[in-house]
Each structure stands twice: as C-alpha cells, then as structure tokens.
Length: 192
Ligand code: B12
Image (cartoon, rainbow, N blue to C red):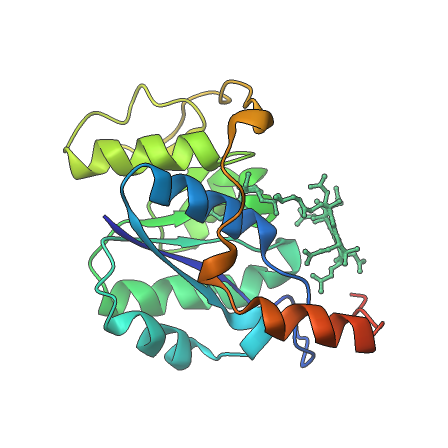
C-alpha cells in the first residue's frame, strides 16, 4: 500500500518545528519493512496549510493516510480530516498523543475511520495488511473504529513491543539536514 503519514502543525504556532517526527519515522520504517511505500509530510516543519498538504500527497496516490500530532493540534487536525475525506476516498487513521487517549471524541467529531492506540509500529503494519486483504479488523488489538452499525468499538490495548527488534527510523524519508543544523542554531521551543 501507499501510506502517507502527516505531522500537523502544533497549535497556533508560526514557528517551524525543528525536531524530527521520530514517531512517524519509526512507523514508516516498519511499514517499509513489511512491503509498503511511505511518504512523510512534515507540515510542522514546512508550515504547510491544508491545501499544500493535500497537494503534496496527490501524486503519491495514497491508499491510506495517517495523521499524528499532540493534543494542541486538535482543531487543525479536525478541519484537515474533513478536507482529506473530500479529496481522497481512502481509510484515514489517527494516532499519537492527539488521538490515542480520546478515541470516542476523535471518531465522533472528526472525519476519520480508525484510531491507533499507543506505540503504533505493529498495529499500523497489521492494520494496513488487513485492509489490503479486505480482512477482518474486529480482532486487531490496539485500534478503535466505527463498525458497520456506526458504533465506536475499542479492541483493547496492543501487546507490548520489543523495541530492540524494530528497524531504525526512516531517516531517508525526511530532510534531516533541515532539522539538525537549525536546531543547533535556534535553541527556542514554542510553549503552548
Ligand atoms: C520528547 C517530548 C517532547 C520534546 C520533543 C517534542 C516533539 N515535538 O517531538 C519537547 C521537549 C520539545 C516537547 C515539547 C512539548 N511537549 Co512533549 N513530549 C515528549 C515525550 C517525552 C516523548 C515524545 C517522543 O518523541 N516519543 C517517541 C516517539 C517515537 O513516539 P511518539 O511520537 O509517541 O510516536 C509513537 C506513537 O505515539 C504512535 N504514533 C504517533 N503518531 C502517529 C500517527 C499515526 C497515524 C499512528 C497510527 C500512530 C502514531 O506511534 C509512534 C511510534 O510508536 C512525550 C511523552 C511520551 N513519553 O511520549 C511528551 C508529550 C508528547 N509532550 C506533550 C506536551 C503537552 C508538550 C508541549 C505542548 C509542552 C508545553 N506545554 O509546551 C510541548 C509542545 C512542543 C511542540 N511544539 O511540539 C504531551 C502531549 C499530550 C497530548 N495528549 O497530546 C506528552 C504526551 C507528555 C504528557 N504526558 O503530557 N515534548
């Protein structure tokens, strides 16, 4: 599958986020190791608006789109989910600290299909595999989703991950040079 992973702008910041999106980079390397093609869009680094995010992924032809971020990105991500669904008819998955702890709110207020809980490497890879094969996701631990009756279902927490067995983050999918030198120069981080 072609999977796009998006880091949204955090809150109302006009400051680029100079810290690499390590969570998405771990997800990406695991997705690649299981045969998927991945694009990471770091809207927080490039200060991309919704239209720019949509345009970036157009040529990549995504089969699944994932959004991460923390809770301060809530409003932006909510609006983005509706815009994504207008343009792309593919499963939209939310994960990370924004979505992980409030699946009911996310699935009822945003226009998305599935929430992944906690560390997502194994869960997302398995989810992608099942969706690709039209397999049942009702037994997949680590997700919440809306079932056929539009009821929000939580499948329970995922099994522990042995981090030592995971591949390294997908450094090749981000422009590392844009993070490291600037982070050294600019020692200021936005506080919300
Ligand atoms: C390092 C860290 C920082 C660093 C770097 C932050 C950064 N932007 O990368 C610094 C010190 C700068 C920082 C600042 C802040 N932080 Co901070 N930070 C952390 C910390 C300790 C680790 C995050 C991390 O890198 N984890 C490692 C990576 C590999 O994991 P991950 O990003 O969580 O990603 C995994 C999963 O979440 C999931 N996942 C993530 N995205 C997605 C997307 C999809 C589609 C899927 C399926 C899964 C998925 O899979 C990933 C791989 O397993 C966490 C606490 C924690 N233990 O997680 C708090 C935490 C993320 N921070 C938090 C907060 C509130 C902030 C601040 C707003 C604090 C403040 N008042 O200023 C600022 C925001 C700064 C900013 N502009 O972003 C909260 C967020 C709360 C929430 N519910 O959203 C946390 C959870 C701490 C807490 N318990 O309150 N932070």
